[in-house]
Length: 329
Image (cartoon, rainbow, N blue to C red; front, side, top):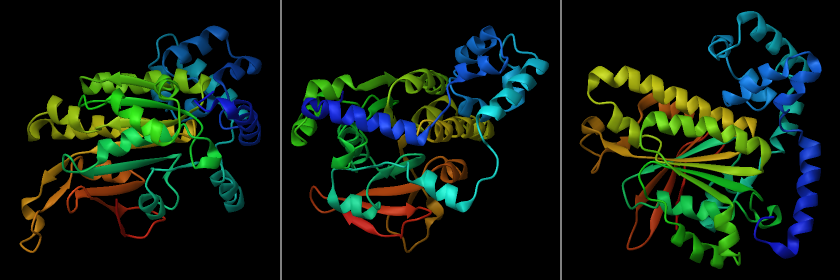
């Protein structure tokens, strides 16, 4: 299925077993067996909701905003979804079992993998920030390939979605990376879906359209490069800052829901801004763009900077389960 033809059957069987054990998400079609009209289910799908898990991540206010769904219908739909999906309390032991479904995708660098405890994790947002030419997009290209490796080779055995806001995706760069890992470059490129976003609204709509694809095909990685660029262009001045942060928060919330709903790793790059108040003892004070809204949304924050010569340094800036340390690659 994913470039490794000799292991195709093995990987397919392995995936089926994983899917049966995990039961990651319940298709929205199951609502029809609980008395919900097929027409109403179609309206939910048109709004980008393809799983019962995804439905439970929306407020009733949002759902009543969908054309053709009244408050009474929304109440009935939510009641049916609650019967299918358990969104209540679970024990710590159950939470630990769910963590076993998390896949760690290798970065292609042993030092960086050790820093991250095995690689980029699914079900969370990993943010990489730094100056231009510090290696953020290079890592994104490498992850496009390593995500398609079999799980026994520290890959994700899944497809990749790439949303590009800066026009920096280079498919020709994927070819030598695929060859480095002994993969068929053509098959690797076929398993990457790519979209170029030009406005923040376009970027958000591309995220909404992903649910349909991810509910049908095995995706393991979503890349947004970069998450903040279009917001810095479309919103100008302090007068629009509050609205910008609100729209940014909605987009980041959507990314979090995609990561958890479909067991996907989200890797997003971020820009830096000058910090004049950084202090006299810091030679080059810079901080990530996006403010506190973006800081709270990202699970793991990685700071990239240039090292000596061609070296790049990655530091764990913030993570719930990783120590603050550096890796040089």
